[in-house]
Amino acid sequence: MLGIFQNAVAQAPEELHSPAIPPSPGAILRQPKKPDDILKDFHAAYSSHSFSASFAAGAALAFVSVHSPRTSSHPRLFCSFDDVYCMFVGSLNNLSSLIRQYGLCSKSTNEALLVIEAYRTLRDRGPYPADQVVKDLSGSFAFVVYDNKAGTVFAALSSDGGVPLFWGVAADGSVVICDDLDVVKASCGKSYAPFPTGCMFHSEGGLRSFEHPLNKLKAMPRVDSEGVMCGASFKVDTYSRINSMPRVGSAADWTSWEGSC
Image: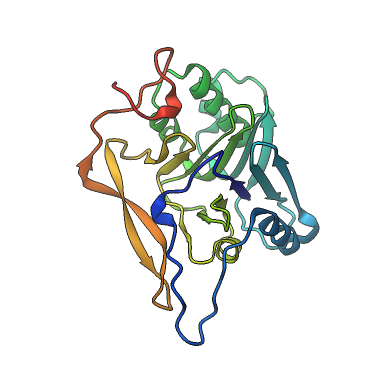
């Protein structure tokens, strides 16, 4: 899966940007690419097994079917409902109980549709903090949700790291999120890194840990095999606390990720 989101939709953490440092002699210089070129390369890499959708707000989604020989063994789903789109890789161990919890009676409900419903519940009337809702998802998974009505993106990666997910910055500053490392490296030059496990990213609130919502995240500089700065890894700072927890419901917008309990 591949998601590309321009600055009007989401902005990458500043630490993900790597400075333009000349490579060592003999090293290959990788320049970040523009969104249109990234999409073309993605389709070229996966041939007839991929499809994509672009949106006027400045977002693009691309997905690969399970029939592609290049994809991993993890289940892959792409669904949309009420102008909300979800790309989901992996599986949930507690899907049945979550279907009952959200009142979804359809036997055809899968992980991607469940995530869409959870997102819509949070967005419109969520009684719980976003981190608690994502933490309730048990399994190995990575997902990217794009809300075309609100023009926002919401992504998360399970804490076990069982599904690979990477992100980076394109030539125009767009956020690139993808489960294919080669695609991200070719698209973002040196400005890429693994998406942190146990974390979620939203257009308005940025990157947060859903495992440890009371702790801030700190950026750890990454150096590649050529000795060049290459994005940043984010880890929970056990010594740094967030002063307040996000609140959701009628009195506060959950996407702000700020406010009192």
